[in-house]
Image 1: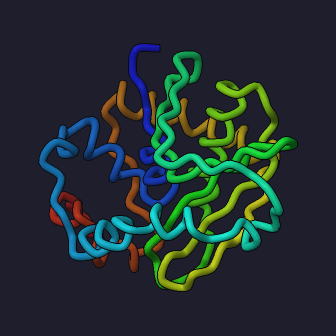
Image 2: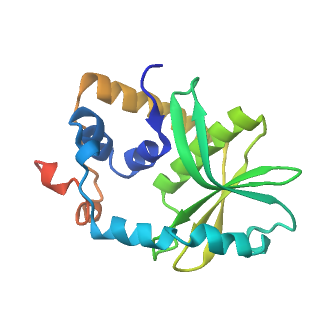
Amino acid sequence: MSLTITVSDLRQFEYCQRIVFFSYCLGLSRRRPTTYKMEEGDLLYENVAELEAQRSLQSYGLQEGERHFNVRLRSGKLGLSGLLDMLIITSKEAIPVEFKSSFSAVVGTNYKAQLAAYALLIEEQNGVSVNRSFIHFIPARQSIEVKLEQSHKKAVLLNLDKIRRMIERENMPDATVVRGRCTACEFRNFCPDV
């Protein structure tokens, strides 16, 4: 596999396939516009690791565990890489945790895809099965458990293939049917029909 796809690409592909198309086929990722929402998210992330290290693991339903922040994961076999916000390792399991700056504590399919991708990377790298994960919504100070089924992991593998075919053929996919997502999209100006 020559092209390495990122976990962020998989998350974006689930949200709107055109974002990945514009990034790879038009080379817009190198000059990607920054939105207000992106800047606000960066500000929230600055101190979250420091604050998280001081919290107990109780919000994750754990009594013990070791936290690792900004964990780089890569699989040559899958052609996939990513930077996980936090990985909790216990004597029984490995649990990926993603921090989100969204004020709405809703776990969308794009977040599930992201967590399932991290699960695949952790399973390959650490040789453990990953069956659950968490999203920690920073503004709400709420951690939501996300169960990871085999169907989520299979969907990641299917989407990796779809992304590679889309890039190879340079076929622009349809815009998302959820047009509300287009309002604050950094690629809105590149969509001819939105």
